[in-house]
Figure 1 (tube, rainbow, N blue to C red):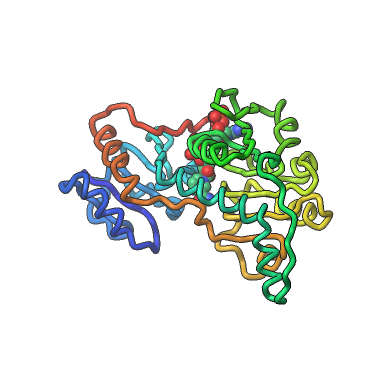
Figure 2 (cartoon, rainbow, N blue to C red):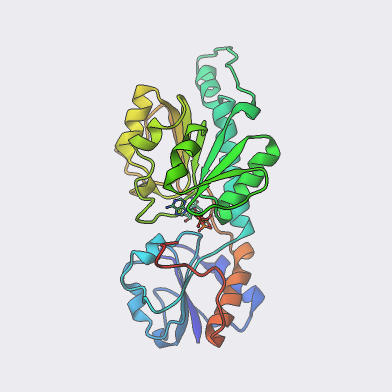
Amino acid sequence: MSIAIIYPNRDVSAWVAALHAHDPALAIEVWPEIGAPDQVEYALCWNHPEGVLQEFPNLKCVSSLGAGVNHLLNDRSCPPEVPLVRLVDTGLKQSMAEYVMLGVLEHLRRFAGYRRQQHHAEWLPLPVPPISEVGIGLMGCGEIGRYVAGKLTAFGFPVHGWSRRPQALAGVKVFAGDDQLNAFLARSDVLVCLLPLTTETAGILDATTFSRLPANAYLINAARGAHLVEADLLSALASGHLSGALLDVFRDEPLPKSHPFWKHPRIMITPHIASVTNPRSAALQVVENYRRAVQGERLSNLVDRRQGY
Ligand code: NDP
């Protein structure tokens, strides 16, 4: 009976140590050096090669090593009868809150402009709006979105959210469903995408969405690259309707060297690091879910395959 960690080309020793810190007796195999595939009951996956899960005939659970699961749902070797879980982790939420806060403030306080000015030894104060007048729209008010909303609200931003179903969130008006999307967008001076990638949300950051944002709106996409229609972003920046974008995720990762985003003066790029799982913070829930899977108990952070997240 073992856990397999499938995280190609990565040193997973921190994961092994963190899991053993909670259960020293845990049998852990690291792909591709799996000694006994038929003993593997729990697969922990990130960037796993498609088809690899077929190697394990006795899986009781497949877990994402992050919050997103689209990589697993898209893999036909992920057995449909085996429960799929993901990580819900305070460290992951906090890290995303830092990323979004920094992105919003960096944009509003014009740091990219000052960097350019410094290059030319130019002393020129740039205008700054009061944060109480900058509407932050969070697309996706789930585990991460709600946490980010709390931090931004505490800092003084007017924050509103958008989710599939209505929900009550202290200090934050949450719009729900397609019917309320336009009202949500109309007050989003900064639009932050924290949605899961599903058939419904793929391509949601497109020309229509951008056209419904206020003029000069700023985009932060920290969800998945396929949420964004890249050509539509370039057009919206060229027309001046969008003032800029901070992008952490891309359709092709790593972003190809020839991609026009790299040299765009109003696009800031980070290499999918908005929030990276810290094994020490997340290992306990893995050990706990493994125990539950083996004992046939209800798992936590279960993914609803039909809704795609
Ligand atoms: P959750 O599943 O907890 O929340 C998802 C939210 O999106 C929910 O509020 C849900 O609505 C909403 N949603 C889903 N589909 C729709 C839809 N069609 N229309 C409107 N709202 C919708 O996910 P997390 O908050 O844990 O994570 C969100 C995503 O963030 C992950 O899937 C991942 O892709 C991304 N991520 C990126 C990272 C990075 O480093 N770049 C790191 C971590 C996560 P409802 O509440 O009604 O269900």
